Image 1 (spheres, helix red, strand yellow):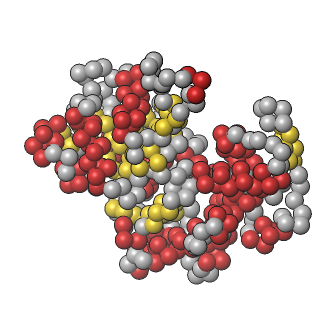
Image 2: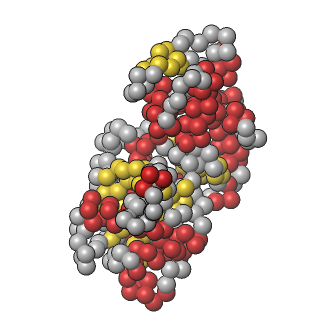
Length: 361
């Protein structure tokens, strides 16, 4: 049985048996509905549907909910049998706390009885997915943005940057902007998320964005409940916030400036291999116009250094940017488990959870 690869994000969990040239078999929301059992509440009329987020800003926060979610994924979704559990590989977000890594490996061996475990950082895996071992990844996730230089398969942590803003913050920004021009209309946040995916785009440059103040065509959109809203400049504000974080009220450099500052922290002899292998990942990176704006801003940042964006191999699925960490994990799983580089049950029993830091890097 092939190893299972799990990439648990703040919005989506991706899981499936290691098949690098295919999309993950399961892509499901990470958010869960909390089931209230009989007797848990006295007045059912006071009950409001409750949800729980096992993963917040990329890190597991609710371990009981995560256990329930993984039970559904592994046994119901992927068909594991009790007592015959296989091997599993997890993707690690940048700067995952040691205690989180230890608790995950402990849960896998002591609760799920896996026969083998491995974990690797998402930045490294995203590079593997495009056939690289060195480069720099910019991962715009639902709850965070990670910028990570990687050299010969090792993340340069001293130069890496993590920002606790992501797709959810852009969705909230769009909700605020839509309310300003459509104050009489209530729009559910899930519907705002869909509007962001449908309409959000990046202006060619800051000057073009500023120009939308004076001239921007309006587009009518009919919500599922029949209400009508108008969308104009809001579609550009979402993308612009990545290049001008002040729009979100943050005193930070834009995403391109952050990239260059990160790379310049690394030894000069490594700059070229990082600049020549930039990988954009995460759903937000596929926003219309983002790649073009990114390259334009990069030229403005440095006239002497032209970063090169890595294009996915033709044999990989089209939406590689969305699933690059999972696909890189599938590639790695084909190596670490057959070559016995993973953590075995015997090694875990002998050393305990701390072994994850010695064997998974």
